[in-house]
Image (tube, rainbow, N blue to C red):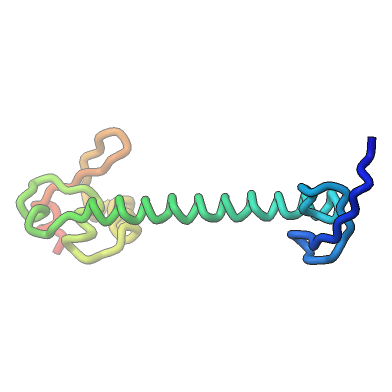
Length: 121
């Protein structure tokens, strides 16, 4: 049973005028409906990605270590050595691979003795 109602509406997606047969129709065609749906899904993904990035940045900011704390330790991680020596992480890894810096490896983590750093300078 079809409706005899004819309502002039404007499509939400393409902004074109069309004749709707029901009160709830929002789009002029199924294609406009699909494109709008995909656009909304894409925007939600982008928003979710931005939120995740912001939370990662906040977590990294919380893990900031002061230089005084690092100077008290005898064993340092690569990131702590970066902070102490003001050198990038990749440079320190190159020095380790080259053999200029000796490390103690526990699993996948490298630990450096502070005395080894003093000898290096």
